[in-house]
Structure formats: structure tokens, C-alpha cells
Length: 295
Image (cartoon, rainbow, N blue to C red; front, top):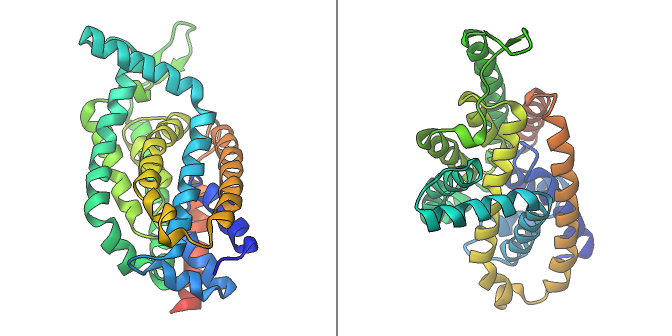
């Protein structure tokens, strides 16, 4: 049904591509198709399947890796939100960031509950995944282009040291509408081939965040969504759909968690100095090749 080799490959793939702006769902469709694992490809679009139960474990492992990496951030955010509930005021950056994350989670949470299943069964096909991967690349390129244009229009001020500087927008300084729009961008990731981190980072850039702040906000925002999606589907894994694959799920989840931790460490450093452009180019090339292969 599901070999240990397949579990390791899909686990590493999930851990990396869930955080890289290249679409984990798209790759979980395309890679099995390229390897000729047709049982996994077919299971992607079934109403209920062992493969979806397996993916639940991978999502939980990925979310736990994010929680571990950003544990200090989450401790500060949790403490800030707790104080804000007690005082009925949002008077610290950590509290404000926490409530902005709550607001940003609402659109995709509601949409996912209503439409995740029909969208997955309809579009979890190799050709569709290839097409949406191309679209993802175009979104990333457009975001970088529009970000550069907006930067040129922002007035430059003189800093305390006499140097030129532009006012910086941080995640905690986003307004509620901005956080809501960034969170709503995640809805696009319900289509296999569109990256959750890619569209939220792009939306963050368009709202004035730097690349490193856009990446941090994207990863913090992804954590409760990925974890909630995994826990919501956990009964599938514990029920009959998980029969015969739980050992493979454990191996795959360990691989996914380790890969996700390594991926977020790499990406946090990458986006401190670099952009989304290389990932956009990859998506355009990989998506175009997939379309040619599966059309």
C-alpha cells in the first residue's frame, strides 16, 4: 500500500516544500506521478484514502517543527495575548502580533472547512498541479516587481546617524485589514501548485514588509493552520484509513519534521538578504515541464 521508501521520500518532500514557496500540495501530486506511484496519485483525489491519512501525520510533524523553531516567539506571543485578555488592552507588540495572527487565520480556516475537500478532489491532478505551479511562479515574480516599484515611491528620510532610510513596517505594525488580506491569500494554496508561504510572503511584501519579516509572519501564520488541519483530520489516521500505514506514517513524519526544521532555518537566513525570484524561476520551469509531461 505504502512502502517505507515512499514514506521517506514524501515525508522529506512535505517538510521542505511546505515551507519553501513552491507548493507542498503540488509536489505531493507531481513527484509520485513522475515516479510512477499511481496508487498515490489516484488516492490524492479520492474522497477518503490511506494517502490523505498519511499526509495528516506529515502536517502535524511539520507544524511541530515550526513550533520548536519559533518557540521563543510563541512564548512571547502567548504571554502577550494572555496579558491583553486580563487588561482588556493590546498595548505590546507581541500581543498585537498574536491577535493579528488570529485575525489572519480566519479567512482560510473558514474557506478550508467549506471547500478544501471539493477543491482537492477536483484539482489534485498532475496537469492541474503543473499549471498552478506556473501560476505560483508568476505570482512570486509579480510580487517582487510590485515591491520594487512601491519601494521607489516611499519617501526617504534622514536617520539619526545622518544616513538615508525608509520607514520600516514590521508584522506587529500591520493594520487589521492588512493582516486579514495576507491571511486571505492562503486561500489560493487550496489549489495544488499554489504555495501557502509563497502567496503570504508576496502579500506581506505588498503590504510593506521586508523579506525577512514577510517570511517570519508567513511561518508564524502557517503554524496554527497546518497544525489545525492535521489535528482536524487526525481521526482519519486513527481510524480504518490508517490501518496498515501507521509505522510508515511514523517514519515519514520524523523525516518531515526534520526536513521542515532544516528548511525553516535555511529560509530565515536566505530571506535576510535574498528574494523570492529564484523560487519563482524554479516554479515556472518545473511547472512548464510538468505541463509538457502530463498534458
